[in-house]
Image (tube, rainbow, N blue to C red; front, side, top):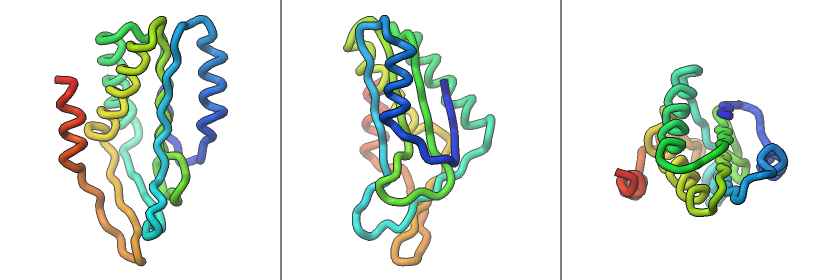
Length: 145
């Protein structure tokens, strides 16, 4: 399942539902990303093109499933304005074995961070600034090539 939403979500409730739906697998892995509370960030805003973004993310999921024996994937990604401490992204993977679940989750996060078509800006001290990809993001993604 892939869900892009402007609505806040509860990662613990999402994980509980994912666990219940995948009770027969041997491994569940999840990652939750939150807006950093660095004391200066007032908010983070993400924009996207509906449909276009979901198609890209679906291709990431298909690539993960072809690479690892993953039985289920659940991705939620926020768009709109978020405050520090709020969840931005949730990724959960299910597999018969832990390594596949871990690696698929890690891969999906790297793809979301580097390749998903989201446009990010943050407000600091009343000024909007666009967030550009970091060199570390490219290095993380390169691990999968």
